[in-house]
Structure formats: structure tokens, C-alpha cells
Amino acid sequence: MMNNFSFYCPTRVFFGRGESAKIAQEIPQNAKILLLYGGGSIKKNGVYDEIMGVLKGFEVAEFGGLEANPDFDTCLKARDYAKEIGANFLLAVGGGSVLDATKFIAQIYYEQKNEWDLLSLKRTATKALPIGAVMTLPATGSEMNCGGVISRRSTGEKRFFHNELVFPKFSVIDPTHSFTLPTRQIQNGIIDAFVHTIEQYATYDVNSPLQDSWAISVMKTLIDCGAKTIDEPENYEARANLCWAATCALNGWIACGVVEDWAVHMIGHELTAFYGLDHAKSLAVVLGARYKYSINSKREKLEKLGRELFGLSNLDGDLAQICIEKIVEFFEGLGVATHLEAYNIDANDAADKISARFKEHGAVFGENGEVTPSAVREILLASK
Ligand code: NZQ
Ligand code: ZN
Image (tube, rainbow, N blue to C red; front, side, top):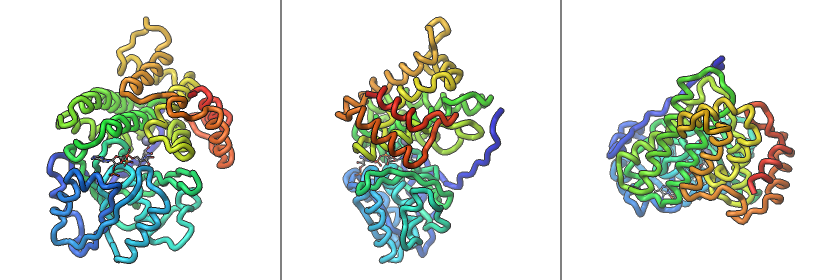
């Protein structure tokens, strides 16, 4: 039976070519805007100039240098700058890292100390600056959700937050803004969004045929339009569908009433924290072994996915097992390696460190709480 649920998303989405022109009407006239960005891609590809043009007449300051896997200490610096200039509206222009960092900065704007508590989930911020977003990388869904992930390089940690106060007031998703993405980031984005979808789909059945069909459609769109986008980066049709699929993969719709997993992400975050692996690559490494570990509880959903996404028939053999293999083949086919060895990470080292960290946090994940620290160890050893 479907679980009870509450759904809330106040973000206004402006989707399509040229839609950034509409953001001026969404920002209060007296706003002191702080525009936040990453390593400079927006200055090279024209997105910065386009947005500054739209914001003519507003008071705008900027803060650049937010890293991929945004760093806690950089967020503190951005917060200090925002306070110094008296910013009252934050505009994130970039990929998931810039959006996540901006959401975090919006919350710590009103915090004087112990900002890490918001990430160790000791408490939740009760105030935040309003934010808007211009998303340049289809992957995280951060443009239409209220979550984010912050890394702390000084301690080798990576932690997430959720806070409804930081839903963007608006998000621009203009597919042409991502035309300049390097292939590596397109591949990463496809895998990240695919894994978001399957983390919410492949658990046990609660009789939710609508959410299941949405999830499978999102995954199909990511596979089809992802491949087309890699071949033809300026194909608007393919890019637009890829962008929207990535947004819908993590905007809450497919999670309504179903049981979620997220163990692949939790283990993946630790791989990034300890070894600096790209987020999507950490997921590609963990998924196969994590799904094989729980194949029995996931069997029904995996068999359905095997039939509906990969065209398998009952005559093919163990559909759940083959479905997992097809997913791993899909990642490899995109050019992303799915074993720790390919990234020069020692499986024993990873298993020791990450299972110890889960133990320290008392963390248990998976749809049945089956991903205990010792399970994490087994999964990482099998990802070698
Ligand atoms: O920093 P710049 O110069 O902008 O370059 C970025 C960065 O180097 C570049 N890029 C972005 N848009 C571009 C572009 N280059 C050329 N043209 C463009 N249009 O791409 C690189 C990667 O950017 P990043 O923002 O780090 O990638 P992504 O969007 O994949 O975000 C990854 C972060 O999001 C978190 C991850 O953990 C990671 O920290 N996640 C956030 C989630 C959420 N908020 O809901 C959920 C996810 O599971 C994920 O954990
Ligand atoms: Zn992700």
C-alpha cells in the first residue's frame, strides 16, 4: 500500500531558451543581490553576461570560486562577504555545487557560530535569505529541491541538509546554458540523475504504478537523450529533454508515497570525501555491488525495470541480476568506470575507512535498514 505523503515545492521554473529574461520580475526592486558562481565557466560561455544584462538596474555584487563539491570554509567566506555588503537576495548561477553552496550560505547568513551543526543534523536553520537559481548543468535536481551537500576538506567530510526555507524562489533551466559542458560533466550528470531515480524506484513494491512509470520514463529519457546529447552537444531537443529529466529525477514527484533507499549516495559521498572522486563516479562504483547485496528485497522492482527499460523477457534468465548488469553496462558504455581499481582506490582501505565512519555516526541505510557498517564493508570490497 502506498505510504501517506506530503508534497511541497514552491519553486517557479522558467524552462527554455531565453527564459532568464523573466527573472527580473521575480526579484524585489530594492534587492541587494549577491550573484554566486563557481570556477568561471559562466564567464567564458556568456551566461554571466546574459544574467548581468537581465539584472540591469539592480544592485549586484558577486562572489566566485565555489568549488565542485563546495567547501564549507568557502561558504563561510561567502557568507561573511554577503553580510559585509548587506545582501538580501542570493542568486546562484552554475551547477549543483553552486546551487547547494548558495542554499547553505542562505541558511548560515543568520548563524554566528557552529554552522557545521546544520550539516551534522544537530539542528535546522529557522531563517534563510531568499535565493534564485540559474542552472547550467543537468544532474542534481538542486534547482527544484531544498537539499544540498557540502564538503569539508579540512576534516575529509561530506554531509547533506534539507530545509524547505531554501527552495529556490525561481529556477531558470535554459538548455542552451549547458551546451558548453565538457563530455565528462554530461556523463556525470546522466549517471547522477539516473541514480537519483533508481534510489527512489528500486526498493520494494508499495503498489505505486504511476510513480513507477514516471521513474522508468525519467530513466529512459536520460539514456536516450543523454546519448544523443553526448554525440550532438548543441542538439536543443535532446538537451532540453535531458535537462527536464534530470530536474524531475529529484524534485520529489517520484518519491511520493514510495519507499526510498539512498544507500548508494551515502556510501558514494564518503568515497568523494576520502578520495575526491566525482560524485557521479562514486555512484557508478557502488551501485552494482549495493544492488546485488539486496537483490531479494529489490527483486520485483528490478525485474519490472528489466522488462520495461531494457526490454528483457522472462526467457532471459534471472531478470533482476541481468537488470543490474545492464545498468552497470550503461554506465561503462557512457565511458565511466565502475570499479574502485580504475580510480586507484584500494578496496580494503575504502572498506575500512567508510565502514568505520558509518559506525561512528551510527548510520544504517537501505529500504530495510540492511545497509549496516558491516554491509558497507562487504559492498565496498565487492566494488574493487
Ligand atoms: O565551477 P565552474 O567553472 O562553473 O565549472 C563547473 C564544474 O567544474 C562545470 N560547469 C557547470 N556548468 C557548466 C560547466 N562547465 C561548462 N559549461 C557549463 N554550462 O562543471 C563542473 C562540475 O560542476 P558541479 O556543480 O560540481 O556539478 P554537479 O551539478 O554535478 O554538482 C555536484 C554536487 O552536487 C551534489 C554533489 O554531491 C556535488 O557536491 N548533489 C546535490 C544534490 C541536491 N542538491 O539535491 C543531490 C545530488 O545527489 C548530489 O549529491
Ligand atoms: Zn546524486
